Length: 371
Image 1 (cartoon, rainbow, N blue to C red):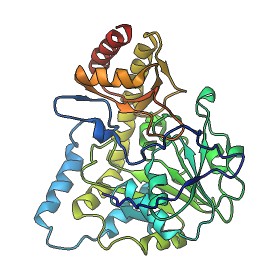
Image 2: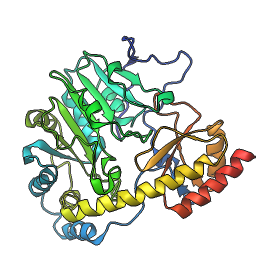
Image 3: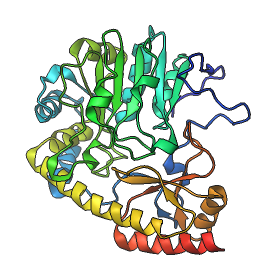
Image 4: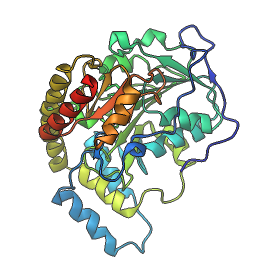
């Protein structure tokens, strides 16, 4: 658990392009995550992790490491496998204990940053890690009326650190790769959180990913293996970027930060078999997501934000706080939206599940909305 400093730096909003916090709005709880919504007996639509056991090609290499835990972890093979997947040399890969550790390393290693900007709404850990490291953070808030579309012109030109998710959690918006790439420039570190990139492309791969771009100055791509493969408890992710930048992050990373079982998972998930399976899962996910969106559209007062492209959807509905509590009473856990900067109490995030689960959920939601 990350220590919370008592003197958390304020959120700055000195630039007209950076939205100030409303005077009466409470500061969002950046430490709140979907797992806090889940409880015994509740059907989980709050956590964006695929709920399926690891396939044999993944489970068996992980299990095989359990007889060899006396040795310290060696990341060499896993780093090489991940690098090969993204057509990079191994020194452009830094393995981490989940994507969340990557944000902490960035915040700790780049203490010379003068003007860090986080594009919201997005996963709150990047900003939380920056603030915990003493940075004063500015926010660019994307417009829900515009489908939370990225407007690169709103990012201050002199921002020397910019963080954005693609696809973005919680909005499920997938920004065009070139729009995100246009944020890169000399003297700036551009951090793109692609934790859900493998949910977006289906058989065509990941069309908006920057994971193979080696020409963009200061680019850091953050990836996670915990979502699609149900490995949140194992903690495995990685960063992709220039060697000199990754070496700064590695210098503040604890020794042996990634366990031997997690390294085995990283290597297995980089194989052609894994990539093929991942794309097939993304195809099925898209169909399940379309079904969820269509069913939600049948309920008066429920609006799905933007054009969802990932393993979750963001919905706006009146009285979402009451609805969330009523859903919980009926056995359903959903993710509140008001802890994400740029959203408010009338937003909920829903994980995409199979069609039977969706149909059952929608009927309960309809009854609550009509009550």
